[in-house]
Image 1 (tube, helix red, strand yellow):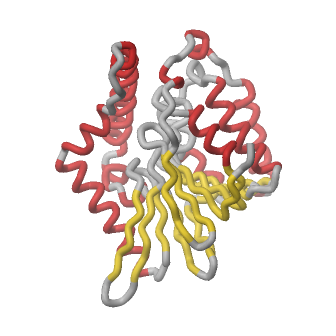
Image 2: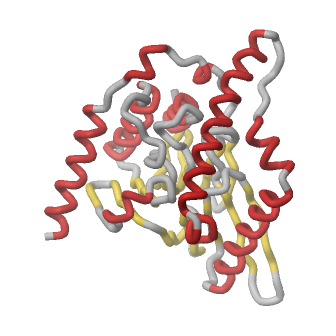
Length: 281
């Protein structure tokens, strides 16, 4: 299969290690592209809800695919988010084509792109972290219920529905939070004179040009791989929001997948931490 050449691809909010993660779709997408740079913009592995008893093979394949892309020459920047914030202690770690950062500024054809996850703008994360974690558990529970509902719905010959999307789109406070988040990112980007500001966190793919009397900036959000199945692509001076075709097979989980152990993941963690100690000394 021929791969699409890209200057840059940005994915966020994959949430590996959770039931809602659409790992097979992520792997299909990564197999279809050949980017010079791949930015994993936070919440890639969900360490808030990470449990050894749930790590299907499809989730491991995503990790293996990323390592294969690195081996083939793709530079990979892993930017930490709130769900994988434990990795922030290793900020600026570098191993081959992999770099771990909190934020990133890239020069794209003479223009500056400011890329970060976005949880820094979330007041709940700063003042009531326990509430944010409780909300994450509730969201994951809603996704689990949604999985059952969709299984029944498809057997009845009806289409899929997204309960979490319906909740977010109907709650005024959620809509206001998203609008405030986007406006804050735009204002900060204009203040710092960035041409592009690229975020994740809110699971809302977006591409929006903002212009005022002094400057302009393009706000971009990569969405997520639970509901929207979206990524951002940059090539030949243009940004595009990629929408992956709907795939349903991940909602049918084999019983033995629930008991997959993680010796290889544990080994990778040990390798990274060991090398980080050596790097710091």
